[in-house]
Structure formats: C-alpha cells, structure tokens
Image (tube, rainbow, N blue to C red; front, side):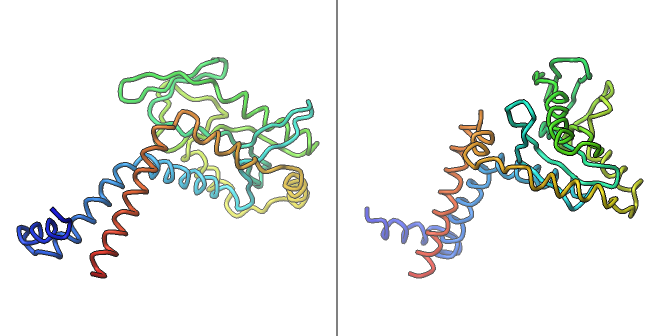
Length: 238
C-alpha cells in the first residue's frame, strides 16, 4: 500500500483528521526522544547546578585544566575559584544518595536505591591538585575541597574537606561583600596564565568512560528529534 494512501486512511480514522495525525505523530516522536535523552538531560542539569553553586563563591574561576605538579607530570583540576579567603581547588563528585565516608578510608560507599557502590576516596586527588597550585603560587592560601552534587547525604558525618551545596551558600553569606585582596588577585592571574586547557579528545574520553549505552540512547534520541522535525516539515508543506 503506498504511504500516501495509508496516511489518508489513517487520517480518516482519527478524530481531527490530518491535524491529529500530523501533531500527534510529532508529539510521540518528541516524547520518545526525550525519554531516551533523559540521562543526558539529567547530567546537563547536574553540571549546570554545579557551576551555579561554585559561581556563588566568585566570578573568577577556571575548570577542566591541567597544571604542572613539579614531578614531571600534570595535575588535573576540576574547578578552581578565587575567593576572599584564598583559592579553593575543587574535585567534583557527581553522585547522589547516601554516602559513607572517612578521611582515612581508601574506599567510600554510595548507597542508591538500596544498592551499594564503592568508589575511591576523592580527597587525595583534590589535595594533589591543590598542591600543584601551591607549588606555582608560593605563599598564596590554597585549599582543597571535594564538592558533592545536589542530592548527596552523609548520615554518619562527612570529612571537613567535603562540601555540599549548602556549605557553599553558607560560606558565601559569611563573606558578604568582602573584596578579594589585591595580592591574591595577582596570584590568581598568574595561575590562569600557567594552566593548560584539557585537550578536547581527553575531555571526551573522560566524559564517556562507562557510558557507551548512554551515548547510543542519546544518538537515537537526537535522530528521533530530527525525524519529528522532518515529519512536521513534510506534513505542513504538503
């Protein structure tokens, strides 16, 4: 049966005829595409929240950069922010749920929906990045912190160097409008000149480790959105 004849019969059978078929089919394609893209949308929202949270501390910040660690290697810096109290170097944990952690523990536990997952203690990596900054900026106050994303809870307590978004907001309120000391601002500018942006290929590799199924769903979701646009273009121009 030719496609035009099939669509004509379908239009006749649907309440609203051609309009119902045109917009209904497009809506179904879009809804299915959004369902496939839900993980990517969730990650995008999480990243936006992280940047907004760190933006509370100060407008001068860098992210996804590398810096010489003084041992013929490079330290990776997730985020660094200039504040009135010094430079904060952040490692970012994008997990959520219940976290059981301790400074001296090699492995921390994350419980989500009654399932437990182990992950390495993130404090040493954050301290390594902060130490690389201290090496480049002798005398400048530099502190290492690990920021957990929205939705993380520490029922048994959390290490001092671990922050939640509420901790960031509380610190910002405590600072008020206190300015950044001039010498610290100059040290920050020196840091900005010395860091190197993470190569795009490496950044993509970090982003997709263990997420191949998610990439396939994302690709299919994008194809469905294109199909919805093509369908509407064809139907409305007919």
